[in-house]
Length: 416
Image (cartoon, rainbow, N blue to C red; front, top):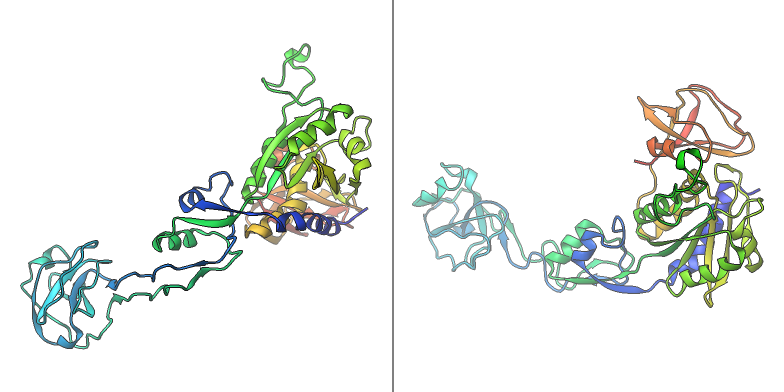
């Protein structure tokens, strides 16, 4: 039975070629700012971006104040017409000062700004009534002036290939007049929920008996994993397939097509009689690799011939907590790393209450942190999805631990 670390390394190695071979796409920066189609919008540059213009593109005022000549320090000068932001100013004549707003272009002839706070009125618009201004002693060239290229030189690299597309980078691109940029396309994941018990549309609970509730259930895994993938910038499609062995592979290949970089299945890999993923894909090379973890012990992976090409397949158990915990432990770290998404914040905190754990497995429990202590939410069972929704942390009880006592240190990952 593998350790968690061993299986995570296997998943990373399996996905490395597919993640490295993704192509580029040209996307408008407005679309990237919206995060359209990519969940939280995690993207990385496919090529370095250089500045077509310097930033700032012209000398401008750092303050609301008066544009002056530093050489006239200590002298009284006449106040002329103001310069609002966005206006092209006339040259500043010797012996004059022009009221100027923050961001407005410095007029030719001026080389410093006197803040309005240093005048008797102390603020605009009252300072616009001044007829004369004494340029303060010690005013030097460049005082409160943002010079051309002081932020970015023309032709300088704004960001290298592989850099994450951050809000600050998007703002810089917009300031430089760049409307579109080449980015690595998202990882495309086909999420396959398996099981004849999954409802196909409707409310999922039609049928006789049990007060009108039949034997079908709604597909929680498809929705939950699609949302989890979006958090690390992956694009996902979902499909539900039954336990019909004869129909499974053709339907899977049709869904994979030319689109999917990765197939992520849930369910069908245990030792039961209707384990369609195991029965169908194990002969194609899917390796069943149990992991010493609870929940999420049954795991499988492989690079399989699907739709005329080799496609990485990662298979999780079908119980919804098992599937989400498996994603957090094995797949999220790999996908987050390629797009620069943050890791789950981890810390070691004392337990607030006792618990038990299978000594030969790494148990992942749900919990909350209150006053710096770890409280368990619900039990360890893999169907308790509502308890996971209520939790704020994943709580790790390591292999070799059979009993947790209050005060024992536990590693927790913050989920929100």
